[in-house]
View 1 (cartoon, helix red, strand yellow):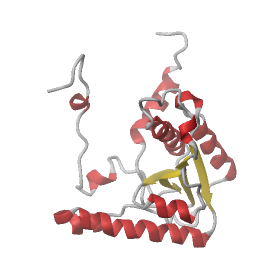
View 2: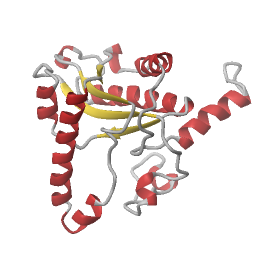
View 3: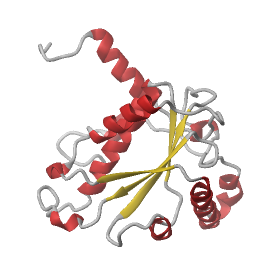
Length: 215
């Protein structure tokens, strides 16, 4: 084993937090997140890798209750449109709880920064690597939250143009996530969509191949 490897206990903790991370939609109301914990979570997000060290992520903390309600209205409007687009699964989708915007202790909007065309390193042929980098920051925050005993949910059901306008974002910036964060009643042993019988995770073997695309 490499001398740079962590101890068995430390490694087990890393793999455990990865395995027990969940996309949370139900939160315990009126229980705040301590400022020092929130600072650690944001530091974890900011420690994420990014292509060309562009650090394209921007985190906007929503502390205004009226603004939170406005964001919820945007999410709820897109929820109805998504349900309609699902056709025969419309009523099934509407029965799902897909967000906790009004209930969570902390609400963040994550966006890609403006003027991203300035960064060419690593993006000349794959400009979407800015999104990949920001997703790494969100995942860092998600895992850190789970390690702190907090739940987090990534809401992507919103109109990005309308959300950007609501928050006064520059035209070239792009919101990619509404993050619900806070104490939760419990952490289920399986993803919520499995428990709701909406979809089921498939085994790793279906996603790994060697030397060529799998048949």
